[in-house]
Length: 635
Image 1 (cartoon, helix red, strand yellow):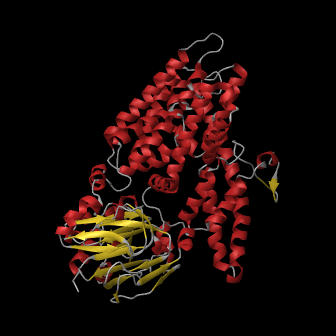
Image 2 (spheres, helix red, strand yellow):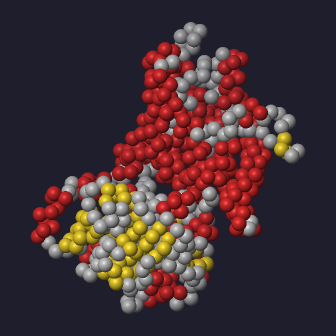
Image 3 (spheres, helix red, strand yellow):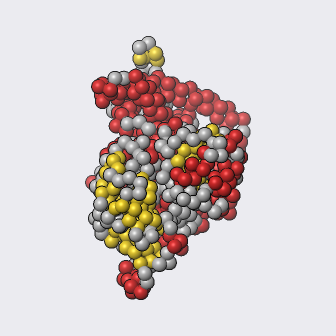
């Protein structure tokens, strides 16, 4: 066995020394450190150090990716006087966010929105199409079946966005998804807005809905509700008898979490809205330019927290009483700051997935739908979101100075301009000022983002690399492969084939662990892809490493972060050093158990000693059955 003493010493030294380590554990490929201060770790050194694949900072853990021999390195690390807690990760290590409050918030929000960004972007485009139809077709089109169905298709996802958030938040906070949906459903219950009136109380405690009158299309209140529910669920599980947990845990969770949310979130939201209304009104009366700067800069943040309803009623009241409002104008154009930022990202990024998200996000932002842009791109990149707020402040200052007046409640995005035509005399000056404000918003955010804001989100999957790989087909490979020594790796699972770059884990997607392919399994069974020896079978059964008779080192990792399940839903049929034949069963796993925990079931199949091969070529088939051709490892 290789001696990893020097590597272990170096790792411990460059994570800040053993005094900086609270504890360390390991999974199938990574040392997972809990550090007292991650700022003391020399991440760049460790990333470049021989023997270390890369470093990942996530979930409050400082993860040093080693590879299949991580158990040996772990043992060597313990000999340096570091406190080890074993090979199985536990939940508390994954719940702790990393970094300052802003970084924690960004990581939380982007993590919650990433799973459904595609659907969100598609719905945003549909809303834009509906807006165009309404503008072109007038009143007649609104009664047509085409308009009605497209409007429902585009608006429904945003209307019931809280349900999607309930599912992803349940996974993040580690609670039952269906219980989270039950809590969320209570907040969205039809007609509850009419039933709750002033003076309504719960066991003597007053409560109220937010000023919007409902929790539809809200974000932060739903996340808070699920977070509260997760704490209640965890507490209930700690004392409830096992025989009652099936129905008792969700019952207690719903009974406690729903009232807590209504009693706390609604009133607190109303209180903050009242404070904001007073503050913004005083600022507007003091100086419209300063007011415009502040409102333009903060509008997107206010919308995220549902606090924008502190401004909207004042605008509606002004239009109703005096026929116009300049109060709201600085808040009309911040969506175009997202247009500029996303345009810059789309032009400069080299990540395939980022480009795929940027196109729909760009289009929907033109129509005032910015959720795909914010939650999918600018907020995860951080700087573009900050830049968009800066651009929002500049356009807000200009619009506030110009005194652009809104004469009626109009559309969003490019359909907002007609609201600035004076119906009394046809004065068009307000539209001109808003167009200038739009140009400011787009140009400032585009330029600053292009030069200072574009970073990687998905680990640097380059378009050029993807393009060159895409040109490799089985037809072009076969003649070359026939002239070279090669090893065929069979599919260890049945399911849909997924490119490695699309795996939702930076270490796998960036090929830091080696080249390979991923499978989205439709059956919970892993079989050996080769004749060889089991070199690593993790105690939790979620991953296995095999060395083939020809020397290929193969890692099969079932799902993402499935180490958190602590073996639940997994059953290993082999042990370390067992000899296996191709097609022999290695692992059984329960797909519903993994999905219920909110974890992806996508399974990478990696050749970890890729550097020993001239090339590693994967199948071009969309689906495979266990035993089918999957990978060619060419020497």
